[in-house]
Image (tube, rainbow, N blue to C red):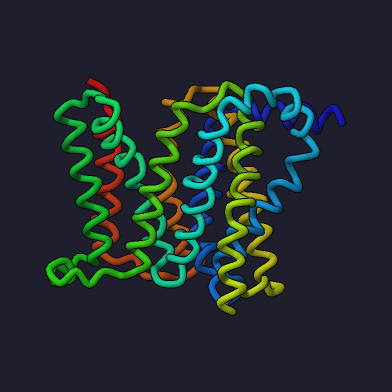
Length: 301
């Protein structure tokens, strides 16, 4: 037992390892979303993933939630909106988009989220940016556009965009809004806040699941679907969050946030290796612009 505890403490003391693993799990979420097509419907997947997270977390966090309830209650608006925007709507759109677009696209478009956050910070919070950061924002958006039109200007001219790509971009907008909302996060521990968001996400995803049931489009998980559910529920939804929270505690939010840039890299590589998806020249150009743009946008004067 001492050996296990020692290894656990050493692992949780290595911020870089924790953050790399978290990004790898989040990158794999797009692959899992593609694999879920035909195995479990999007809203069932969105709802059931949070059931798994709550079932695992609540026994460990319940007492702390009760102890911090007075503080939690003061931030109930932020908690509800964050759970809806960042967890429910984002995932519902993301898993729906997986039915129409590739996992490579799903992950590359997520690279636009940091730049969306920066643009919104400039517009709504009057954050000052340097010319280099402006160039970075433009480069990232250009990369997203190139991937969305598959490097074909005719698609842009006729606006014949893939609906899955459109859903993904809308999902990224909601996640950027969720990220900005974290500025007003109530002063509670990270795990208490995350568990609260998971509970909100479960409750607010129930109407979406009900719509699938009423329309007759719901597909409960097949045996393969349950395996995909286990991966999504335990790794990207839970363990990656725990690792990221711990990484932030160890090296700070600014340094930890840079690791998020690895999500499109890991996601694209996993999609090519595991799904055999093609990685075209426009993907490479788009990825280079997205990552280069993020690097420039995160530079400080």
